[in-house]
Image (cartoon, helix red, strand yellow):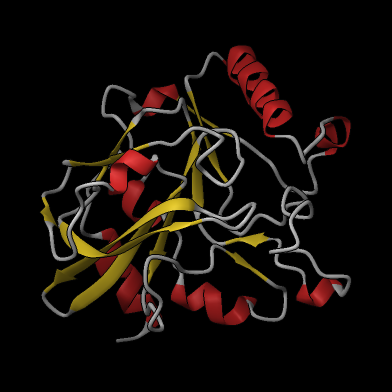
Length: 229
């Protein structure tokens, strides 16, 4: 299946705005947020601080009359430079290009499956700046197979989960985690689509180097193909 065919079939699974967080938040509540290195306002924000980022997002939502901030697919960001898990002196080897879509909303918010699927794997990824608790769902629709990743969840979300457990579209699969358990970030969901898991379990790269970007561009399609925010 060509990449174009894959994306077309993926997009056809949903017909409009498809929530991946509590459906009480409507499409009109979302505001696009730019956290890229091109956003000059961020030069005045301590991007190494989860608290400072949260204050910035709160102010942004207040100014724009929004309730949920979202964005980040393929953004080059400086917020990962604080962690040796991502950083590297060589700019070509520095992991700072975001491969998922972030949805910034309060800790404890319900996380929903946008389409039906079963649990592929889950794990608490404990590196500083990592996902923290993470769930990966496997989806199969005729000849279309792919995975969705949900990062920065609460530890409670993993407690009674089982591999192979099935979730219907729109069913709650988890809750968003607090800063102390989510890799030390302001509370948000990292949502990512993956075509080939490459034998990863409970984890998959969510940030790419410049050198590896061509591969990840094909293996991690734009989440908006499903969510249509």
